[in-house]
Image (cartoon, rainbow, N blue to C red):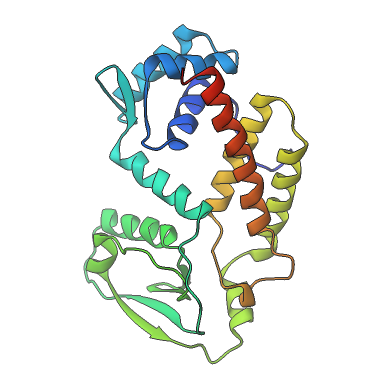
Length: 243
């Protein structure tokens, strides 16, 4: 699992990944304690993690249950989008965002860069972002305030343009290795950590039209791998946690 960015299994990661995977993302403390028990994490360790996550602004606690804060709700929405991409048929048009706001403070520039990545736009050069117009999503206020959007078609080969904007080979290579590792894993803790890595990788999928992708693009297969894990884990939660 070298270079797969597998993060260690901690009480915080178990709580966070569990809440990110349920809808609505809110569970009683006793259920989260039972989830921790599936991974051999003591009740006290889970409860300490919950308290620290509330203090850090990751969770809110009310009525005996813990829920994700707004920041993490946005992360959940991005993850859901990566699993079920909001794509539409592509007619060859590209959406182009040109930064037109002046005298932007550093905070606005940082927020814009983060928002552009979340919209899966790639930076052609400083101040100009683009992608194929095959996605439907809402542009956040920080993008609307700072950018003007245009539509157009590149004069150069769109396949070559896409390959220059995104590291498609690198993404595909890692996707195949993650899918193989997830399918070979049997222990719940290992599958859980690998599935979290798969989900993080799917968030980085540029979601390009099939005609711009290399042959045997592993994105759909990796989504299927993750959905199988999710179904298995939901059944485990139903049988052993949500009682």
